[in-house]
Length: 376
Ligand SMILES: Cc1cc2nc3c(=O)[nH]c(=O)nc-3n(C[C@H](O)[C@H](O)[C@H](O)COP(=O)(O)OP(=O)(O)OC[C@H]3O[C@@H](n4cnc5c(N)ncnc54)[C@H](O)[C@@H]3O)c2cc1C
Image (cartoon, helix red, strand yellow):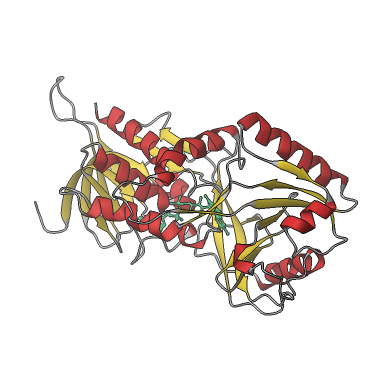
């Protein structure tokens, strides 16, 4: 093989959680893979910028099902990681006093949890204060507690999936490997002749041939489709800013801040949860953006601080670190995981919205099965 040329059964474009999960599921099924990641390290974009939560009621039905089907892996990740990936942290959804829309959303949340068999309880304002003493006494009209939600070890999961790929003979992860062109050969000939091949060209001129492409390029997935003459699907990258900050809350007798719940304003105006010695917080914004290295808007940070300080006694003043990530959605909000409708051998793993981490194990398996079917 000429220098700079490689061959594999499946080429996965993108080394975020999607690419890592697809790679992990494919090598477990005995398929050779190359993961090509444009950046010098995997996980630099949305995967490295999440809130690291697992919420079983979150998202459309497809997402909730993938989350439920990922739980067995999260509880027992086998040899992918040697430590627990989940840390139990109750979520308390709250609505402001006088916000009828918010109150109805709380009622709907409890009903949905009931339908899904997920423990959840509607709370009076006094009960909200008992489970979330950092709330201001007069702020909430009520709340919902879901005691079995979790923090997820995103870095542990992502690195563990990539490690599984790296230690499999015939599989590899290439970093600094931006794919800039894709072409599919359709060799003429009789049945049993050579099968069609994709030819990928890297920004440095390197070449990879593969039977199947998995498009796991996050916010850039439509660009990858265009470069392969596959119709784009109209993905929408929506920016969300998050930050960490020290708490200035008065001491809570016998209740370390770190043990507090994930507090979520039910209509999507803010959220905050303990992180290290302080908190991780967000405006829960969804600002239309373009595929790029997203940066935090300080106006979004300031507005989040204002809203969180109105609702809680956290007394947020300064910010330790602020960042933004692109949550990328399909037009109908469902994740796009499966074969392209038009072009054979092109598998989508895109539009993971705000749920790509909590669905990764099962979604990776679905994509792996689609890739294997495309090789047959
Ligand atoms: C603030 C915030 C909070 C969130 N909270 C949660 C949460 O609590 N729980 C949850 O499950 N999800 C959460 N999410 C969503 C989750 O982070 C995403 O769904 C997930 O990370 C998307 O993963 P991905 O692999 O598709 O994209 P990415 O991580 O962006 O990976 C795509 C990769 O493709 C690479 N790439 C692009 N173009 C090319 C190319 N031409 N060649 C090679 N490589 C290329 C990029 O460099 C990138 O590394 C949150 C997101 C944000 C921003």
